[in-house]
Structures are given as C-alpha cells and as structure tokens.
Length: 368
Picture 1 (cartoon, rainbow, N blue to C red):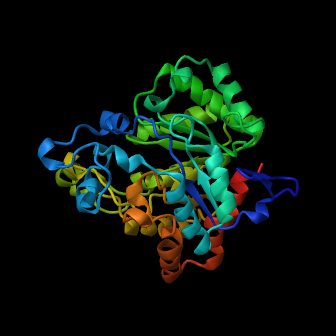
Picture 2: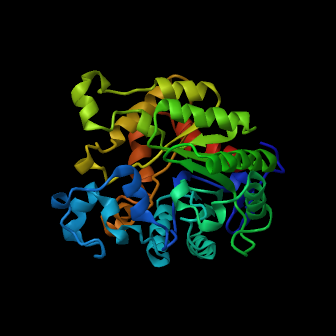
C-alpha cells in the first residue's frame, strides 16, 4: 500500500496502519424521520393482524421482543438509534478490541455526522462515513429529480468538502437497490460509480430482494460505468448462501445446504463480498421467511477461504435497529470479536487469514 494513501474518518484523515480491526458494514446513528416502516412493508408486505399483537407506536419492551424478532418493521421505535445508546455500543466494540466501523448510512437514513464524530472521539473507535444513497423509497425529495451530473456534484461535495454543511468528509460511496430498476436509480448508479472511480474510494453496494440475475445486472452496470470491481464491496452476500424462504425449501429440498456458485462467480470477477448481519435477531417468519444462520455464514466463509478467496472477504454485523444492540437484547457490534473470530480460529482458520479479513483488506479498501 502506497505510503501517501489515507483513510478518511469522521475525525479526519488517518494512515491505513491506524485502522485496526474493522467491521465493514454498520450503522451507528439513524435519521429519526426516515420512512422505515413504509419501506419495509413495501417489499416485505403486511404482517397478518393476528400475528403481531403490539401497538405500532409503543416503545420497544422486553415482553414484545419475541414478536419483534419476527416482525421488526411493525414497530417504529425499533429504528431509534440515539447517541447515548450508540456511544455505549461502540464503546463495547472498542473494549473488545475493535478499531473501526464503516458507517454505511447515506442521505435519507443517515444520522447526525457531528454525533458520529462525538462518539468516535469519546470511544476512540474510528468511524468512516458514507456518501451515496440507500434504496429509492428512502431518498429525500431533493434527490428524486436529480440528473446524473447533479448526483455526481452532490457526492463529490460530500467527499471533498463535507457532509451537511460540516467539514466531515465521506470515506466511501454507498449504493442500494431493493426493487425494480428505474431511470433515476440508473442515473444515480452511474454517478456513484464515477464518483468512486474518480476519488479512489471504495463502494458498498446493497442489492437485496432480487434474483441473482438482477444482482448480476447491477454488478455488470457498475463495471460498465467504470467502477473498479476490486474496489466494490457486495454487502449482505450471505443471502446467497442459504435459502431464506420456507416454501422454496418445501417445494425443492435440494435447496438445503450451502450455495456458493454465485459467490465464486463475483469473486472471480475481482469483487469483494461482505458477510454481515452476524448475530441477527430477526426474520420475516409471518411472511414465510427463514432466519439467516451464523453457522451457515461461517461455514460459507471457511469454504470460500479454502478456495483461495481470503483477500476478497470482509465482515460486519449491520446494526441498524435497537433489537440488534446489546442494550435491547441483541449481540451488538461485539459479535464479530466474541463469537465469529473465536469460532473461525477453532475451525482451523489461521490468525493471518483472519487478520486479512478484519484488518488488512478493510484498510486496503478504505485507503485512497
């Protein structure tokens, strides 16, 4: 890695060697007004009334956790990641040996970046903020009629000047799609790819609730738009490792087990995959969904390491709601450090390989 490269954090630029153990897909603070329930209901559907006996405006409470684990988007308070709560969660990560988190929030869902800076200063955990956008229903109104050039101008300002009128600069680009490809999304995606390529920043692409063909279309488009695939992080990739719909398992029992063909396909193209949501405490059971399994994720990582992809895998926990925090019954950011890493070691994965996934590759990707 060139000596003159830096990583842009909310506290300023640092040398890549200072990053440390890094969780590569996280959320720390969230916008309080983003349409959380509407977005999830749009692509997950309505929970049958007899399956969710909790008032939608009730605060998260211990007696409701079992229901919320299966229907998290029915209660607005699950979205509330406030500064005191997340200070303590990030502090836990630091005490267990965590050095940095990549904050993947973008306009529309991103919280107060000055709050991110305060948390980072108080905990001494580096936080890298993002520019770009989340899924289209979350876009603030100002973005809905932007041209490709206007998208690019906005992201370039957040990268080179600062976010929301501050001097805090973005350290990566975020792009996301959860539904059909639209003309505005295409314009944004092209601008995002060009911004990342021009700045040297990496990009995290969230491509969910779609087929492998649709997923491949986004990767193909990013490559066509000039995004270097070795700087592209495909997050939530564990969704391709196991079948997550009960009916499909009933109809086709061959779908049990690990599915790694598509992972190998994108890895062979040079992309990086992020295996995240470790410690996940929710599913969409009332709608026929199956919970993601940490055991499947770890087994998949081990298999991919055996096939030689150790330089193209990173990991995270994707803490995006209260239910995933330690203070509200979840595992928190520390799941990587107190379960995933020890388990990988117990399965024979070498310390040097774990360091690649958790230290070296994150530093390489975030350095520019």
